[in-house]
Image (cartoon, rainbow, N blue to C red; front, side, top):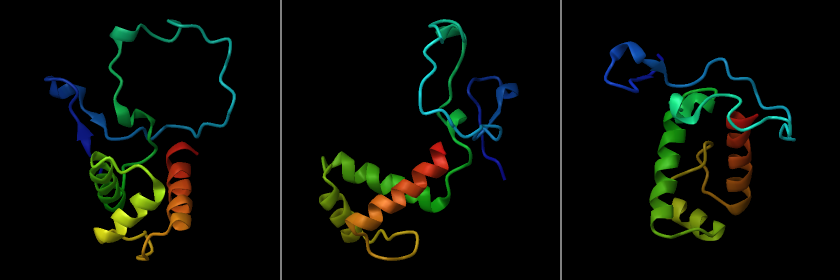
Length: 117
């Protein structure tokens, strides 16, 4: 099931919750010939955050994101402290293990590949 978002009061403007046609980004070097204002006028287009994601986040990803938001809101930013907070709050890795600095980094490296190719 695809969740939808109504960006305005007009129900005809319903858009998919993610961009199913997005291609993975393959060029690590930005195009230097692109010019400002050449793609579209800034105010003439509504940009929705999930236009750039290839799939709807899983329930686990949503839960993990919420837990991290809570941790960051407590001004916890260092990796050892983040890992400790996740373990203290009972949040486990996708495989059900306790977090370590190493598996946190490898897990987020994989999640980043899903989002950004």
